[in-house]
Amino acid sequence: MKFSRRDFAKIIGTAALGASTIPALGAGGKETEGLSNALQNGTGKFPDGFLWGSATASYQVEGAVAEDGRKPSIWDTFSHTPGKTVEGATGDVANDHYHRYKEDVQLMKSLGVKTYRFSIAWPRVFPDGTGQPNPKGLDFYNRLVDELLKNGIEPFATLYHWDLPQVMQDKYGGWESRTTSEAFANYAGYTAEKLSDRVKHFFTINEFGAFMEVGYRWGVHAPGLKLPPGRFNQARHYAVLGHGLAVEAIRAKAKADTRIGLAENMTICAPVIETPEHVEAATKAARELNAQYMTVIQEGKYTDLYLENAGKDAPKFTDAELKTISSRLDFAGINIYTPTYIRADGSKQGFAVVPHPSSFPHAPSPWLFVGPEALYWGPRHVHKLWGVKEIYITENGCSAADVPAADGKVYDTDRVTYLRNYLAQLQRATVDGVPVKGYFLWSLMDNFEWADGYTNRFGIHYVDYKTQKRTPKLSAEFYKAVIARNGLV
Ligand code: NOJ
Image (cartoon, rainbow, N blue to C red):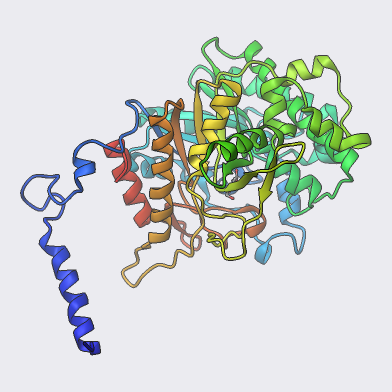
């Protein structure tokens, strides 16, 4: 039988009509009519009290870079250096969140999020890195925190999301020096002391695995260095030491009920196939491939293999430093976007990394391979390897093309699909008893995507940078429905 174009159009049309004969949500009849049985039966639910949130970071949204005493960070310098960011973009204005934070809190409120993860700019609080604090800089976060609490949204604060005061780089070589680790701890303790009457959760450092690797090794992010291996490993050590010293300082200065963790973009090791031998290999890999950051923080030692492979380039450290680095944490935060596939093999390490084939689906950000099971394996490894009992997904989301349609809306079905599939895997983790307590979607709104400037949009609200108008995308509607149901939709 032959189909003409017309027949085809007819069939498609009928299918579309068919869809409209299914009662729409809320369009008369029972609210649940038209939903799949699984959803009606309560499957796909998250644990009661699950903390749904969204996230941003200071330099990516605030703007107001010279206001109220803030001095430059390494990202101001880097983004103002010709050729370092796409189209020479800078965070000078970004989303103007510094002035529009009240409007942005309303975006959160309308989503129904229970919590918001933001970061505090070190150069606002200590413009010179150390020495005299700047009360006007801290006041912005006082205002923001008060506004969040007034609207029933719990603040989670990150103390370092990459905006190192420029002076620390100029004077001490940034994270190449222990002085920076100590200065960070001083700033962290001071800030937590001032805010911990209202902020109960602090993350020390965001993504060692990005700002160190991309900024100090590949030179693609601020401060744009390509350190040789020995110096680089030492800098990694001072970064995790900064985390440990900050944990100690926060414990010493903040209110007793303050909870402390970090937000790390671990390498997420997913077994190529979920059979026992590959699962075992992926678990080994999760420990080894995170040796420089998460593993030493959790275990208080560098793995033998890491030290052996580094050889003469291994970092120099003391037992006392390892003890500080592994100071007790109350929770772990993991930023998860993409999996690294692992298979079992007969090598000494017992695993091999399987590179993504060139045809592997990815978001516009070329590193963002779409592998939803990352959201299952990430928290599971953290729980199984180190017995962590409170885990947050501190970032998850994706970039998308995000072109407004004729009606002005952004139908980001790709992002919705991404989120739906990833959240299903997160829900699987909770069913398997992995103690994931919350999820922060990256990002509340489009923002300054570092070296990619404003070209890669990650928000669930579209930002028109000419007018600073925020418009909810389809993914915002989706996320709102997930939160309302506390489950998959
Ligand atoms: C992780 C970083 O923490 C965040 O700043 C960045 O925008 C997202 N990944 C997306 O690349």
